[in-house]
Length: 296
Image (cartoon, rainbow, N blue to C red):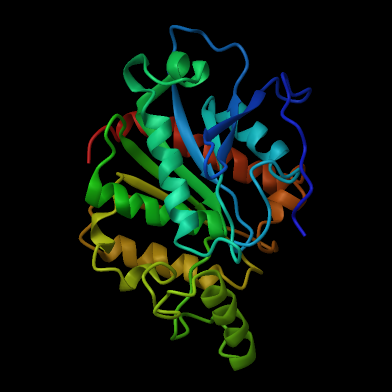
């Protein structure tokens, strides 16, 4: 499951977006697929979206066919350079390896600031004062946890402006909202998590239940967009994250978008449907409005 891959494209027929693959860390295999919108003026610096794919930490890759059309659309409509990260996956590489690989990729991206680094797209076109993290499902979990790391450790060479969390994979011991109380369902979700992260303290580990993290109010960006779907089992965790972050001492701006009638990561399965297009427009608008959030 989730092992099919597609090659990058010099110019996507639908959007004109170019993509290419790069190796970030040869020893571990950490790599990425980069996306660049067409008609990029060398004098115009573009924001950077560092994207983390989903798949419960077990399946899918940055090169999966489900991601190519979606990220092409984001790159085109948001006019943003995307670095889609290929991190090592559980169970062969249990967490926190995936988090650490993703942090290596982030550090590699911002190492190109000041005209440095080995990738010409990032050197020539990227604005490292406008960096975003984003992801879906487990990738949204990674994006959140790396934003926490930015808040505590900083981001030398770059500035994290915003966070895009689509159908985030969060959970917790106690149900929230109208979340299922079925012990079998909750038990399966817990087994998935502790299999991916055997060193975890359990389902209330801050890595999977962000509100348990004492660093929660120090998330290292000025704004956050949370996207949930009406028929997604994880919807209530997204709402809980939104509500608790808004009440915290963080001090940034958080907004939420709920998509009616849809299920978990529907936009990857059906990227051409109207609601998937609405999602792309919302993410693009969120990224483009970053000029008003230059400090935090």
